[in-house]
Length: 212
Image 1 (tube, one colour):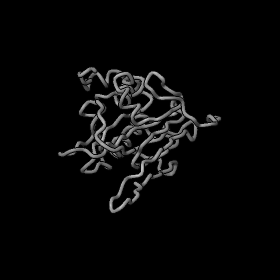
Image 2 (cartoon, helix red, strand yellow):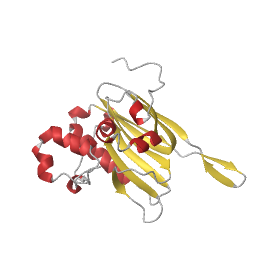
Image 3 (cartoon, helix red, strand yellow):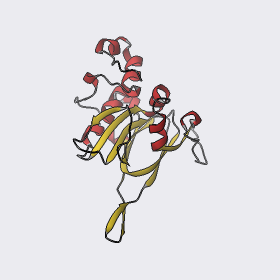
């Protein structure tokens, strides 16, 4: 996998298109773009936030986590989904690490954006997490603002025992880094539409495709 990072000049040279590809989809986010602190004009009134609380079952005197299968569908033609999902263990990937614990990571939190190019994504063996479906982002800063929101969410939801990785635009991540990240993607994704047999990700088992 390429080790060279894009310079600020390289990123700015390509204007919007290159910025979108480098920031939303690339594994190697330049340092100056890795921590967005500016205020983001977020259309909260046009969004829906949902959490997936951790669940446990007690066997004897020991508590065991109950794994969840979480499905992210597409709610409309201009609706994007920011997701933050927690998986057991330290899942290996070269995606951008937002936070790494000083000790052993017992959980890997994957934060990213599901755009409308992926109709559905079904994640498996999830401990818990959250999603935010945001509408009309094209009217509120577009890709840049969406990326800012997701990166800020990744930073703000880090826990001391959790490694937090950021994949940006999930569909673009698959296109750019799928072969190199095949094991990582097939570990967290059980199905999606459109499927990616080359990445060991079958087509989603949703019955009805979106109608818009």
